[in-house]
Length: 116
Image (tube, rainbow, N blue to C red; front, side):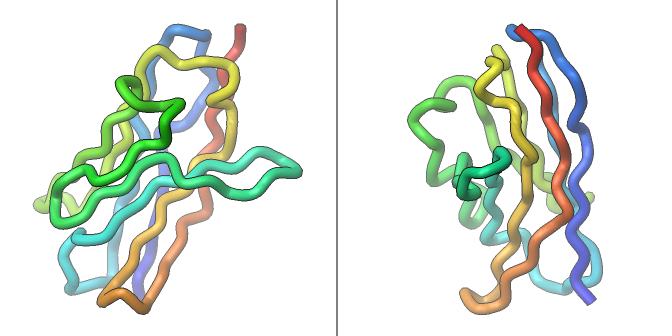
């Protein structure tokens, strides 16, 4: 059974940095299609970064130059480095894995709170 587990969130002052981790277990597939989303209460979940075959393919405009998605195949883990955090980055961050273009798996999310 595929399991997705995010970690690394927390309370940070504006201008600070965080690295979120997304650990994938229970799958024999490589980390080819991975995405990071975020959601605030009352709003739709939004895509912030994507990676396909180890290459970052998408960043939301408002996070470009501040967010970096990477992966470590040996650890089956995808990361989201967030620099120069802003209060508007406050959200629950979710990791999504897609296998063979069909099977979609989500983690439980990790809370990021940025104080001004």
